[in-house]
Length: 274
Image 1: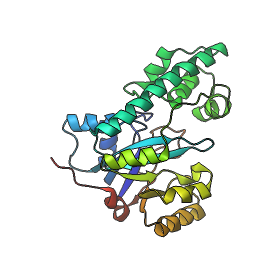
Image 2: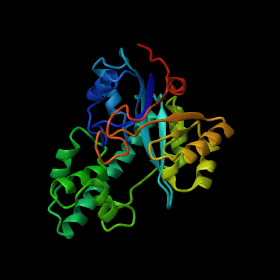
Image 3: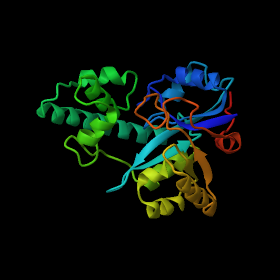
Image 4: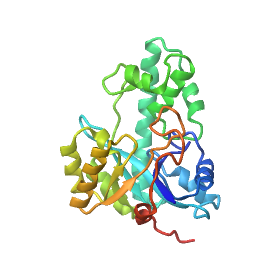
């Protein structure tokens, strides 16, 4: 059996509701499932408040993926086994979500000045239950109205860093995120280190973190080996996951296509108290 420590639901930019994601994990007999939505723990909270977490059939690991401030690089820190009701964590999440909404409105304004027929209401319909409105929701809306062939093209031509409709937003510092994850009782892990694009920076971050996402769909074998040795060098937990969103534009289309061993996944699991 196996586990997947990196997945997203409709509470951020995934296509599966938390209930659908858990059901899919059970169907393929995953032992461990990390739910790591961007800037929110609402998905896991919904499962908990509806009596579905903790549950039977799959061990759910409550997590959150948070973006850190850096002038040139995208740094994503995943907090595993966080207290989904921790005040410090929820406070920083609220600040980040507020900044997301401000950026969202500004991006829509820019797109409208460039004659794209897109409204905030259109994006919110795509976003559904998500309060963590992001560029992915805008990209999907642009695809839906026929402006671009796919989400990747929308980012490459309009929404990515340095592109005409890119708008920066408030992001906490790395040290601040690590601290708040620790306050929430979690372990701080660097997500998809290859996508950071700077292995010297990755190694500097390893000195501060608890874990490293060694196994990831876009990592080549030599990348995986490099990050494995980095994790061993700094005595870090070895994470891995599919970054599943349930859309064909991502690295993995189907849950279960990319997994890690139980031996690695179980080190991130803390049995919840009923």
